[in-house]
Length: 219
Image (cartoon, rainbow, N blue to C red; front, side, top):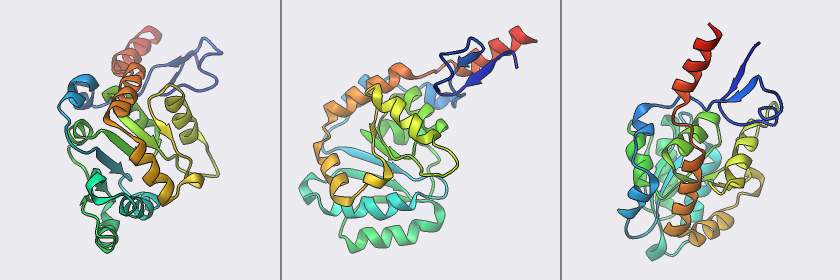
């Protein structure tokens, strides 16, 4: 291959001139979101958290987040939207109800730009497209990489973004309800904005044009 294009940096992208960090193509409605400074300026009250488990739902988040929120005094609890995955909606709602914690549980999010814009911080996995969206939009995040025996790319994604100040990397083996509750209570809107700004600086919002330009050069 003459060129190898990467959606996110890897240890190889800086070592060989044929390896290019282009970013991943992202939907225009996410790319066109207002910068974090403008969005966060309109946020008021307690923190707003978006929990995203993906289309199938991340069971570790479905199990731990309700327990963590129950440990936070009611007056200090954030406003939470929790995307559960379709097959887990009923069980997750029941879990929140058993903890007497009120959140908005949805099976699927069809307006991700609005949800990103409303959130101070997102708790989610660290897949390549998710991380690319978080950086393109400039959204603070707590990243919980998927544990898989065959690959560690999500761990690398989380480390890259967290080392730049754009996220908090929370390894799944370290996740506990009390630890997550403490982490949430230690977050402020100011801290979230700083993370969002750092993430935004890393965003490759021109990825589609960059990739197209490289392909034209090679044609």
